[in-house]
Length: 161
Image (cartoon, rainbow, N blue to C red):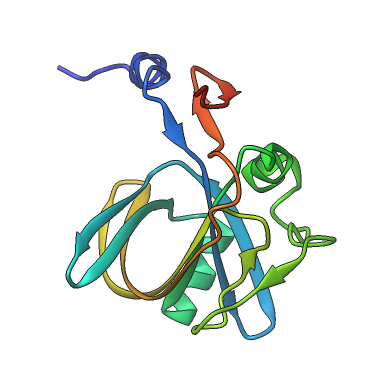
């Protein structure tokens, strides 16, 4: 028996998640995409994972470069989440007009994010239309400057104290 993908999508809307930008750069080309499928794997050694659609432009850059950057978005970066979720087409420069910085690998981070993880890809696992990239964290930066951007039931949310 197969579960209807729309039923799964509807049920997953009840999972509150933070939002991050998964970015990669190869040669002089950089690209990024909004992800909610990002999590810590282990602390020792420090590793994270992200699930990325195989036909995404960012996927191809990460595969070629062997590394990726994660910027955890702050509550005031909803417009960045939307831009990188496809409101700005894949062919355009989603980083245009944004201030970026790099740590070790040269992959771009968006200034103003809560935290950065600069990762070297150490493993990948393919599942149907997606690949889970497992990255060893080579460097991290904690900006600790605001609350997180939350996504729940097709809407952006903020944490209440």
